[in-house]
Length: 107
Image 1: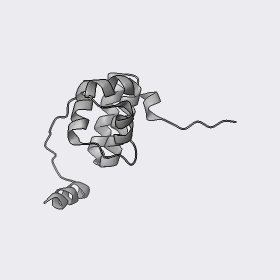
Image 2: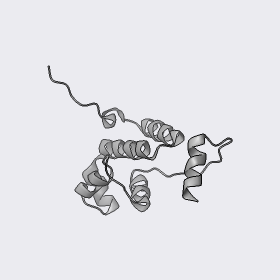
Image 3: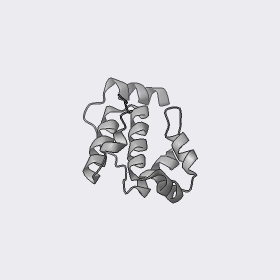
Image 4: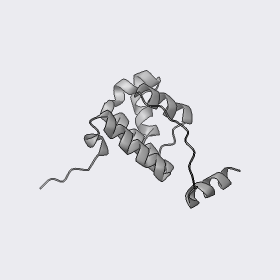
């Protein structure tokens, strides 16, 4: 029996799926999870097409969105824009411990 690796990209079929997956990752606040979800969304849309739209090679896009990748913020913004997604700032009522720690670490 052959076991295939589960890939979130296989389950992203509608614009609503994109919003649910990305919103959940952003709310949880783990940067690696956000990048993982963005990568899955990109794979579901077609990496070759998106790489051309963003202005990077397909290989560079795969590398930057990989587990060991560290994409620049501008790459993420351009990628999201090419997929029809924008980030919006929203006030949170009570910051979580992780958010407070992240803000403190940046200071």
